[in-house]
Every structure is written in structure tokens, then in C-alpha cells.
Length: 409
Image 1 (cartoon, helix red, strand yellow):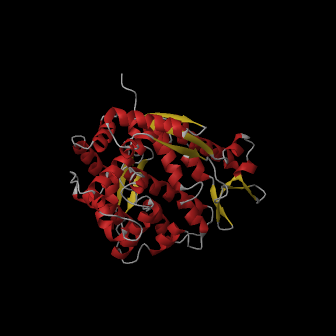
Image 2 (tube, helix red, strand yellow; image 1 turned 90 degrees about the horizontal axis):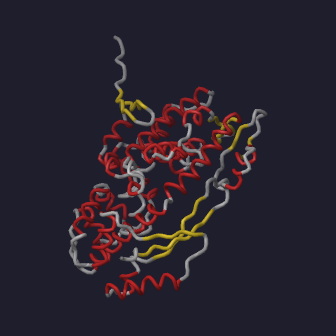
Image 3 (cartoon, one colour; image 1 turned 180 degrees about the vertical axis):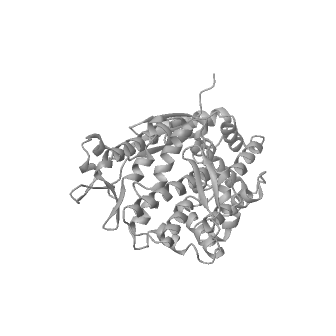
């Protein structure tokens, strides 16, 4: 009897072309409502207010990561690295689900209506719930994701200085924003990967490709991820949710979806988050946008004006510089707002605030990128490179910002 070929699903991706999804647990995970939710979560939050093309989703990114992880593992196996079928599938599952814990507009939830629960913790909670549902078939994937599996290079492929996550999002985000500076050569990076002493390494002839990758990452952070308009937009949506939660706790009934209402009314932190995981899985960007459209009509000045500023893209003014802004300058803007709109100092502080942003292109202290020299020795990419600017990428650059309402004519 002739064995029937395994059926596969093909996705047409604008970055890589055809992506093959094999039938089995990976296909079933993609079909799961927890994962399908990622179609409704933008990859870059509110960056589309700066770059109109940046409407791609966490779903796009996760499937892209799956594709290049397939290629990376195939490359390593072709070079004699022993990876079992079980390890291969588990690594693919780990990268597929690495961002499943992201909430609406990515990081806004973590700093507003959910207290001190990082998206990686939420991803683990989702993976553990799915592991129960899939009868333990995600156990090894969880070990690889958490870095507890003894073969460290598998974890480095999922979460490291040169992982498949960064490799996809740089290329994908540069494509959708139109920022050519971030366009890296993923095929070349993958082709140069190898394993030495259980560590992921890059062969010596790939050193210039890694240089380009690190420089591209730095440029994308300053020009895209930390663009001043994007920074103020993310701060505003965080404050929208904080104000909504504050009003809800005061007994104000706000129009919102069932899932959003739950998180506005209840105090959710690390201790009780897992009890509300299923409710969280029903929350996405559409809940927040729909709510803000309604909140534009409220009597509360703070929530109304914050919501209108995002919906209408009439954002606060933002200034960025190296030196910190003085409390006196901040207080001046707060006093102007208090006098103009008869607000309390607490209410005015929603519209006037300071903070900082930081960018470190390469952090060699947290598992750097090792170059495998032709003589078999391993050296860090900074030492292997003849690019003097690469060393400067290891230094963290911090800039300060102040946000305040634009002066009215």
C-alpha cells in the first residue's frame, strides 16, 4: 500500500513568499483561538500613526518566525548538528508561541490595567494552558522557551542576541514601515549559523552580515521603535487605560466590551492573572479602539480628551534631549493646564509628564554573538569585527523626553 503524502498548508507571506505549515500539533496550535487572537493585535502598537503601512500583526510575525526557524534548523542539521524530530518540533512550537502573551497594542496593557505582569509571563501561562489541552505535547517546547533544556543553542534560536524573533521583526518591520535601513539579509544570517560547544555561533565569513544586523537594529530603534511620535502615542494609550481603570474603581460605568470591562473593574496582578487567562484571550486591539471611540463622548475631561487625541491623531507635543527636563518646566505646563481647564493637579498630570527612552544595539553581557573563526576559536563579534563603530553599539544611550499639550492658537 502506497503511503499518502502528508498534507501541508501554505501561507503566502509578503516577506518570504510561500510558508509551509505542516499538519499536526503546529497546525492545530495556529488554528487555536488563543493564537488566532494575534491576527487582531498589531505588531508595532500605534506606530501606524507615524508609518501608515505598519498595520501588520503579531500573527504575521509569529508565522514568519516559524518559517525562518524551519530554515535555521534545516541549516544546522545539514552541517551535522544532531537535532531530533522531537527537539525540532518543540523549537518550532517555542518560536511560534513566543509572543502569544502580547495584549492589545503590545506593551500598553502591561503598564496600565494589568499590574506588573510581563508579556513573557503571559506567554508562559498560555503555553502551559495549551500544554494541558494538548496532553503534554508542549512540555519540551516550554523547557526550550524557558531556557531550562540542556541544549542551550535551541533556546538561543528562540531568545538570544541573534534569534529568529529579532531576525524576522527587523526585516518585517522595515518592510511595512518603508525604512530600508532595517532590511537585513535573513537568508545569509541563517546560512552562516552553526553550533560549537552547545552554543549558537556564526561562521567567520558571516561577520559582516552580523555587523549589518546590529547596525540595522540600532537604526530601527531610533528611527522606528523609539520615534518620538510613537513614544507619545504609546504613553497616551497607557494613560487612557489607567484613567479608565481609575474611573471604573470609582464606580463610573464605562462603555466597553465584556473582556475589557473585566480588566477595568478588577485588580489583576501576578497572583491572580492565571485565573483570568481565558478572559484575557478575548481582548485585542478592537476592544480598545471601540471603547475609545465611545469614551470620546464622555463627561470626564481626562478620559475624553486622551481618547480623542489618539482617535483623531491630535497628540501631545514631545521634546527629546539628552539632559533631563526640570521639574519646574514640567510644573509650568501643569499649572497652565490647571488654570485653562480647571483641573486638579492629578488630572493635569495625565497630559504633562516626563520619562526616558534607551537604546543599546548590542548587549554582550547577556549571551553575546560568538563568531566561529576558521581556526576553531570562538570570539565575540565585537572583537572579530574590524568595524570600530560596533563597539559603540554596546553602550546604552539614554534620552529624556517631556510631553505636554500643544499651545492653542
